[in-house]
Image (tube, rainbow, N blue to C red; front, side, top):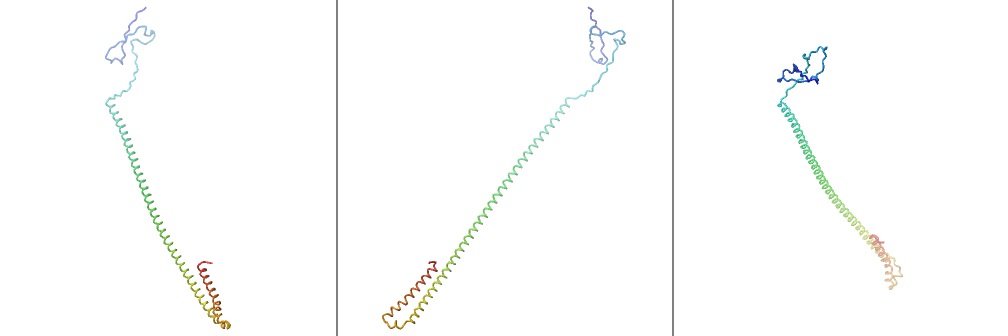
Length: 221
């Protein structure tokens, strides 16, 4: 079994600036076989293209300032939201108070209007009742006056009728005395009887007509 051969390999030029000179140890079996026909030399170094990435150096102070600004912005937004909510609550309270005041004013005006209308209605009812009572009194007075006038007229007619009946009675008595036959005058015993018999029917007629007049004018049969 062949012994492994240690081949020193120089580091590349890109790593020559490192502070430590490190060497890598490889076994001969780990290296690929290189044919002699190749023009590549073992000690020749192949250039390796290195891609350099831009690096930005950011300090912790910058991070702190950025976070502080972000936090201040968030706090400001939160404060504005709280203030907006507070203003909205104040507006709600103000609107509620105004609506309540409007409702109270409307109810008060409606109540006062109802009271005024009720008072006016009571006054009108009292005036109408007073006018009705006055008209009733006037009608009663007119009826009484009319009844009095009617009664007076009836009494006047009754009195006139009685006077006419008395005059008629006197006229009949005088005519009956003026037309007596001679034979009645020659009889002294029958003279008074004859006059009584002749005057009696006239009294009856007068009394019946007067009583009939009273009953007629007084509403009787």
